[in-house]
Amino acid sequence: MGGRILTEQSKGTPPIELGATWLSKEHVNSLDLLRELGLEVFDQVLGQNAIYEAFSTAPFQIIKLPDQEATSKRVLGGTQKLITTLASKIDSSNIYLDQVVESISKIGAEILVETNTTIFKSRVVVSTLPALLFQKQIKVQPELPVEFHKIANQTHTWMGESIKVSFSYESRFWGKNNISGTIFSNVGPVSEMYDQSDSENKHYALTGFLNGAYRSVSCEERKNLVLNQLLKYYGDQAAAFSNYKELVWKNEEFTSVDSAESIFPHQYNGHAIYQQGYLEDSLFIAGTETSVVHGGYMEGAINSARKVCSILTQSKIVYK
Image (cartoon, rainbow, N blue to C red; front, top):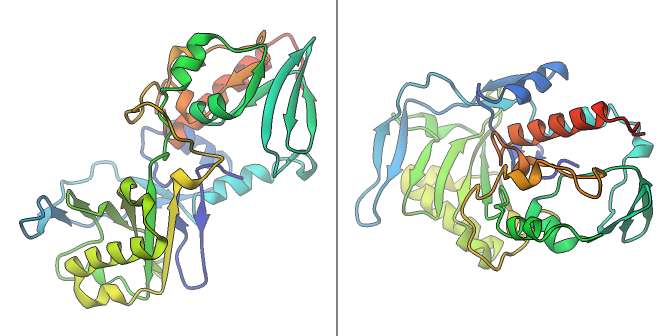
């Protein structure tokens, strides 16, 4: 459960965020939900300085970071706690896993959702899949409008091209000698990296984004490429990692799917085509990509959920 929220933790490591991670003060719906569920947040540590690498032909620099008026926040204990806490509010008998949806059909007043093993019947269906994945993998009858297919085929999938990598360590060595765990590089292979130690400063990690082009190489090759980059910045102490984690989101078949067209980041997120119901208002396309604000973030997903929930609760049809 959780889609593109995925926190992994091994013994001796902090919670490693391989998916959604940060919140800001503008993410009011997310922060409200966390407060409602009794979950806490803490500040992302950036440090006063960052490593910046502009060119492959020049050495990296230590640059001063601007003062942070509003520090990014992380969920105490890992973002996955949001998912497990929400799930605990639902009767477990109403949560179905390992169901690969193949088709959605409207027959009379009913919607039939056919999976690889089961047929579910309902009065309404809400999809939170990325629009491109929904369009390519699920057959809908009666067919959705041509314009919907056109826009969905060109809608960017948040995290779709991302590769997240993380090294865990026994100490926070990057907090010494006027350096930090904040890295920006135009050279790569990691473009951005941040301190992902836990809130108690007991377990330490560096987690960042690897260029999506490295999907084609092996896990071991990716690990060595990133490690060599860290060795360049921090010296031999970077080699003494205790754990390596990675996730290539393009390989997640229930999240990402290849597109025949070039799609720009956040392209068509929040498009008007997603702001309406289909199949006589019995099918709604929600999820973060459909949100008109903060599309492609946790905030967008929660905004879409609240919007659809409002539509359904105000409808004359009673949904059970």
